[in-house]
Length: 460
Ligand SMILES: Cc1cc2nc3c(=O)[nH]c(=O)nc-3n(C[C@H](O)[C@H](O)[C@H](O)COP(=O)(O)OP(=O)(O)OC[C@H]3O[C@@H](n4cnc5c(N)ncnc54)[C@H](O)[C@@H]3O)c2cc1C
Image 1 (cartoon, rainbow, N blue to C red):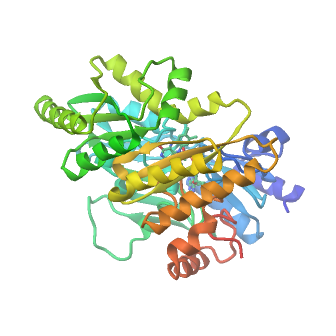
Image 2: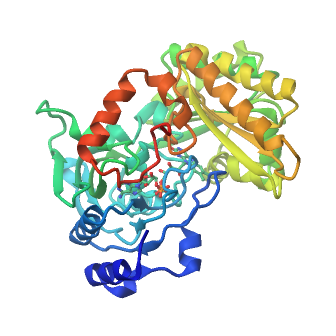
């Protein structure tokens, strides 16, 4: 429990203007984009430097106070929700680009910088950081590192983890470490860097990130292809990836998602299962890939194969894909969306999509399915009207059935959103004895359990 003297002490560390216990501030940081119950922290602190983060974390350590990093607040699993109260460390004012090393294709940033803002600056130099989450206009680099986020371009470029070269981290007792190297590869010692990526603020607070960058492609091409059935659409995904096609994105949207997208984004896409495909490269390579994709689509009785001919149309299409969740949300005003993020081996993707659709029908629930098909990453949105007795519990059971089926067929409970609160119940089943090793690591790095408590591990 935070008391007045704690608030005063925190004010001395970061300036009283950067500390708040106002209800409006606490409420604004009490819930991310997930469906969990909001829970406010006792106090919010806005640090502006590694030194301030270190001082605040040390204070929390010495006084046994929970401390939860918060950045864009766009997580979908309750990851930054301060369920035990305490100090909320709002990292989003630390948003500077500290150094751009063009010749090394590297950038050093503070963690609060937003993905789109960073890429807007990098784009001026012909560079970019590729993972592209659907929430790119709000997700920060610190949040992406901590959730190991990815997105539409992971199929070609990989996930955040593949781009993190070095981190500055404040440990639970306030000690500051730097882990990783400016070198492109290293074989030196344990992979501490990798440990912090995806640790959701439970092992340390990231205050500086060095990212590897990629050159912007010479040309971008986009295609929309629609199919009679989801089986045909998933068949194209499988044949494309196993046949060596190299899309920079291959996204699937089921009929219901296309309907919501048409309705909300003022588009007139054919309302059947659809693939959005994107290629990056030079003109000749792209033309070859487009032709190959067209052949595969024709083999799967494609109803429509349309290339976006202008940059405007291409951007409009990808914006529509990015906004899929928002479109679904707006199509059901007042409803709660329970999001899923399972990821399966490529050969099992069609099975996973069928399972979700059959389950929705069998259980009489509206469950939308769309996602990063090229990675086997399927997002689901179960629609819940909390005022309808039993519907919430029913949808949670269905969402659990989806995860359990995914685990049965060799997948993971979360492809990119992280564990947060929502996936804790599956951690034992997914990791078995390895979960005990994770607990040992947590205890070694955070012996008092003050860093983002209640996340990742199932409640004991
Ligand atoms: C519409 C929509 C679409 C989305 N699409 C995608 C997608 O395509 N791919 C994807 O991967 N995710 C997606 N997400 C989920 C989410 O946007 C990402 O996980 C995002 O990277 C979270 O970043 P954030 O800055 O909002 O972090 P937050 O939600 O604020 O925090 C995320 C986690 O990191 C911790 N944290 C934050 N900053 C730090 C720090 N400096 N040091 C240590 N820990 C820290 C927090 O405690 C929390 O556990 C989507 C969300 C929405 C709402």
